[in-house]
Image (cartoon, rainbow over all chains, first blue to last red; front, side, top):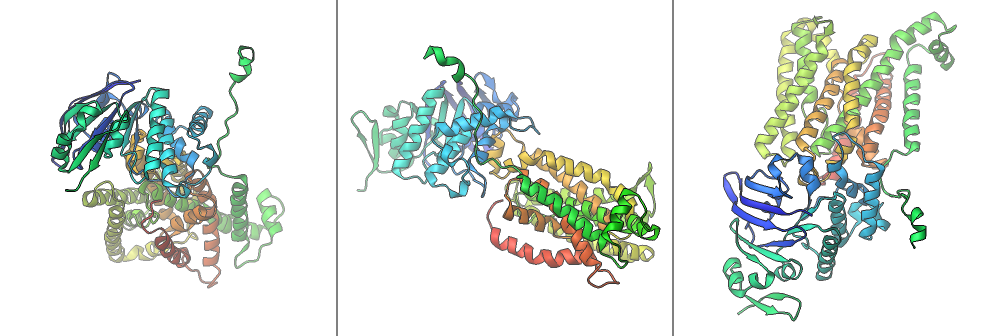
Length: 257
Length: 353
């Protein structure tokens, strides 16, 4: 289990500040969803935590400053699930998941029996063992997402960053993927930070929502406090109704007047 | 339950399907292709030499001295050079395609060969027969030229399109190659004394090099091939997106730098003895991907074996088709390679490797 703390973190691309002096603290085992309008900097925050972009400010994972870690050390602490991972033609499921072991290998190292065992276990846990030898380009959207999760899990990092886990999935598969992530989080004590644009689902699965606007956290707290008609219409420029679902969080429903 | 705990705690064998491995059929097939093509290369020639004589000569007993002399001084070194040149061009092509994630990357498209040509031409024309601390300067000059070309293409490609795009790199490589070729043409024309010598190896001929050529390039090729071999896993990793590889703790930049340096070293050495032999780096790796598999754990070793075989056969064809004259090998490989290149371009289009 690892906590993640960002203090005064800023990221700029070509002189344009995308994340601006941002503070965020995520407890071990917590699921925090980053919500906010397009361009608010959700993905960039994830990239900074995984040290995929240069940042200023202080960023720690499990009390260790990310800036002082080597690339492989970062990858052993943080696994990143990209929005639409590029899955090479002809590569098999097990070959792809085995890539998740890279941070544990030396530069020219080769995978050991232990690495292959971890991959086999991961595939079994995600019910992917039957399609281990199947090429990635023969998978459906939901299967690809599960394979991507398996790749991230094989990394055995305590922190899982997820960029839009439900893009281009139907509602049933969205739920299946989020249930799976939640189950794994509980089983393995993962800390999950996910950029999500489905507000209803974000509220149902995350312990806490952090609302990002123009690269800053403008509000953070339990879903019930953050998902309000006032806040959403202000920051998303949207007409919405927020409806309480008895015992199942809140639904954020667009309305047309 | 407690009573049976001992067995369950033991490690079960790992069953993991779908991992790429070089099947022995293909490994044996590659070695067989290498032996058969070598035999053809040794047997075909203006003087008829039987297979028995070849075997006798190799084991060192009782062969006709005239024929043994032809074999040792002409045919054997030529076949060995062909094997080295072909294997290196194929593995360098596969390596460039892997690190640049571009199916059309090739020692010639990146400007490596043009740079090596220019370096070698300068060495031959301006400082013929020079050696530094006992090392012939031609391959060294070729490596410097090839390195300059690839580095130039890399820098130019980056400033134009940024790190993410690979198209810019290839376009930059083509531009650099054209530029280097023009300088090389100038040097070649201005130095009429060495024009024939320069011209003959630019078109690619393994006839003049002999055992000296083999010894000249062997160390460079050994390093090049060994380094690329050690990067098979990383080349596979690079086939996923750049951001994803980076998130796995792999420095794309570092892998690219080391593999490009190795492939360029091999290319330069090959150009120094073989001249311009284009398209081997595209034909061979792509055929292997099509027939056997796309993992570099398969593509890299098989490229060496089949690239070597392919080039020896192409060379044999080059000296047979218009006998007693000889075609440059580059003519044969380009004749086969250009249509192949177009086929690869059409079938892969935007698809990432």
